[in-house]
Length: 418
Image 1 (spheres, rainbow, N blue to C red):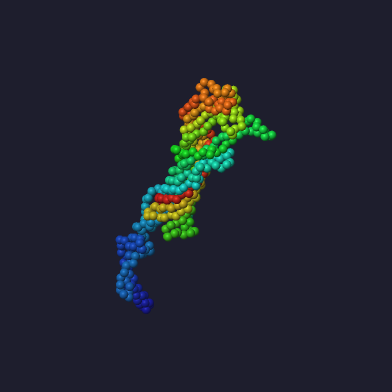
Image 2: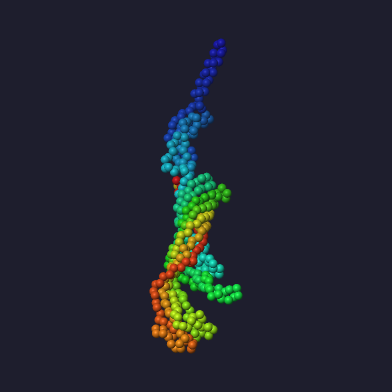
C-alpha cells in the first residue's frame, strides 16, 4: 500500500515539472496587424522557445484553434460576381445595387468603307448600264449598349448603333421611255406603239443632298476564345461576336443638274436633208399646226425614303483589361444591313421653249407670224415665234435608286464593369 502511494506521488511530481518546462510555455498575446503574403490580418501570436538554442520567436496563428478567427482588411481586386472576397466576420462593402451582377455598359466607335454604290434599279432594263457609283463613301458608326457576363466564355449585349457620313455618289443615271412601233404577224406596221424603258446615256451630276444614314438596334453575343487559343502577349484576349437585329436605312432627297435638257413633241422635218426619202413623213401639208418643246436649264429632284430590313453583323477582336473596372475591345466588323432606296418619285424643273410650226404647200408663202424654217421647193416648214415658259415642273415615277448596305469597319470599344 505504501509502495502504491509512493508511485502515485512520484508521477504527480513528474507531471508538474513537465508542465512547468519552457518548451511548453505559451503566451497568447494579441497583436495589432500581421501580414501573410500581401494580405493584412488581425489575430493572436504564440511565443515558442526552442529548447536547444533558447531563442524566442513569434509565429502568427492563422485561423487555428488557438486563436480567434482573423479578418482580412485589404481587398483582392477581382471582377464580376467575385469582385470582392471577404473572410469570416468581415462585413461586405456596399457598392450599389448592380455590384457583382456581371453587368457592364459600353460605348464604341467604328469607321470603314462601304462596298456597294446606290444606283438606278434596272427593273425591266437589262442592258446593265445603270451603274454610276461604286460605293457610298466611308461609314462612321457610334454604338451604345449594356451587356452581362453569363459565364467565363459568353456575354450577351443589347445595343443601339448609328452609322452616318455616307452619301449618294457624284453621278446619276436615269431611265427614260422610248416608243417602238408594233408590227403584225406579217411584219407590217400596225400604227400602234409600245413604251420601252431604257437607260439614258447621259450621266447627271449630283449638286446637293443624298446623305445616307443607318440605325441599328439588336442583340449581340460575345464568345471569349481565350480558353481555345490562349492570350496574346499575356494581355490580349481574343473573342468572336455576332449581332442580330433590325436596321432602318434612310436616304435624303438629292438634286441633279440637267442644263442641256431634251426635246419632246412633234418632229420638224428637214426638207433639205438628203437622208430622208420622205421628209414630210406623217405630217399633212394642209396648214395643221404642230408643236415641239425644248427642255433646258433643268434640275431633277429625287425623293428619298426609309427602308427597314433584317440586319446582321459579325465581329472579331481582342480584349484588354485596364485598371479598375475598365477594359477595351479592339475589333474588325462586317455589317450587312439590307438595302437603302429612294421612293421612286422625282420632281423635274425646266425652262421650256415651245415652237409652233406647220407645213405649207403654197410656194414661198407662210401665214403671218410664221417664218420659213425649211424649203424644198414644194413644201415649206413654217415656224412661229418661240414661246418660253420658266420653271415648269413635272413629276416622274419608276426612277428607284437603291444599293446594298454592306460595309467593313475597324473600331474600338470601351467597357465599364459595375
